[in-house]
Image (cartoon, rainbow, N blue to C red):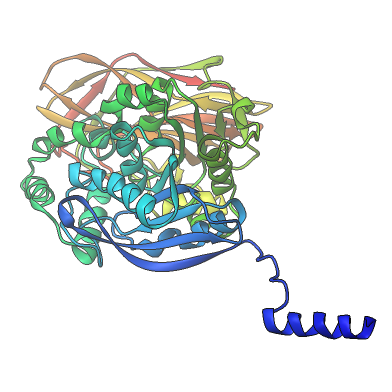
Length: 497
């Protein structure tokens, strides 16, 4: 009888099959077509978690960067799906590669595509409409912030290497960031289909009418939509690089200070998109690790303590560990007094801001700064001032502020201000810089100019040096060759940690 029972159990097992093994958490990746605004097709990689039930799952939407296809975030998406159970949609922004439509420079259709992708994921990919986050690098980051202003379903955003004020990024102090504009235009033509707005903007730039482009900035800048983002209570994380040659850090730092909801700001060495580059591919990366924890807390609702951490996290541009603050640093400051000088305009000197994408990447990856030999700067063409020596070193942390009295002889002059750390032999490392356009021939005026913010460790025995000249290859200069610029007594305030 006992043997018969065993035989029956064996037979039933063979007929019905052995108990199924519990599937280990993982992910599946499919290539899908999603209908965006106006029926425009958006091509996307959809990454869904497996082995964690049937959902609905928290959703992350990731619009691709300018000129970059949807594969950009697939590595990070697979990791987020497998380890944390997210559905992730990484899609090519309209107008680029295999997505339809035309490039509208983060116009209404591009921004509203984010909401269309959310709708699609809820209907087709087991996504939970009550748990939605949006993340992106560069163009994708800007879209993420703008979409958060429009769509209250978005609980959290991670915007990396992005802009919050488009005009301030590409036209700082009324000076065209020529290298950035040329890179963006070339990439747009090579990988996409420019729409009317981009075509008209390029025509104005080529004709020397860049000021005509400025009005399109407000509607495409999260800085003008801060009230909506705050009203929605969106949790906003921003990560940028100190040397970002396209979207410099000052504009995002100012935007961050106006947010009233949960927020985090991470600034670290590097150039545009370099600090988070490897993390997007799924490789270990401290920025993307923070992104994951941000979404776990504010999209999934995991109690991981993120809200108790210091929100402003700044890594020195020339090496060192993260410095963490409760708010943007505003400590003690040193003031350099700048005596009167007169220079001739229109010629370049050995002082300049470097090359976008290259110079910042060298600083970020290899700690090789943009350098200068101060003794070789022609004093007829540039004002050069030496600051205090720091016997025990010092840490600059915050935004250096220049108050300069200037009298140009030409109607229009472009000034370029550079702050250096200088050693005993006069070899300098660029700490930060800023352009400014001056108008009014023969008119003496006092300008207040904020250089780009930084955190920088000055070595023991070194000093600060400050330089102003009138030509920089990164920018479109409007200086008149042979004109003069006279500087009256001025000052530079340098904040310290």
